[in-house]
Image (cartoon, rainbow, N blue to C red; front, side):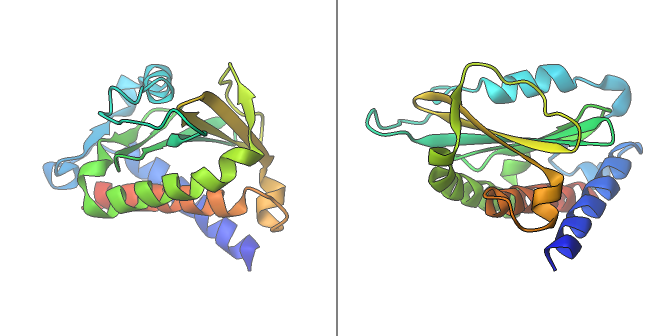
Length: 190
């Protein structure tokens, strides 16, 4: 059953990636900005997503314990990477290394709720992650999670096979991040 869920998630991502490659209409854009492939700013957008500070988000974080305020999921698939970024403010975006994506999704209630749920869940996963100073892209058929916290970066990674066979300790986080991706896709289809 998880294999079917993972297959659906992959299919959703592929459909989303393909839909980002067509010229957006005003009806599709609504208030969410769609990045056109010819304006591929992937590296810069990913870098911004990874280095957003609590101050830039107007957050006041505790100085005690480790508090997650952002999650970045990099998903490598067939030589391309899709990056989903979500923050405790409810803001969320997704962009691809091949061009395309959605930024500013948090202004839509469905995306805002999904992003906040991901951050709440991520708090229970940060203890499974390792402290890191670097944020490289994932290897082939791998998903990397980066946790933005008041104590710096933490990361975790998993190969897709372990999501498909339900053996991954990151499975619930992967599913919740894909819920954010699904909600972003819905906003771009309107």
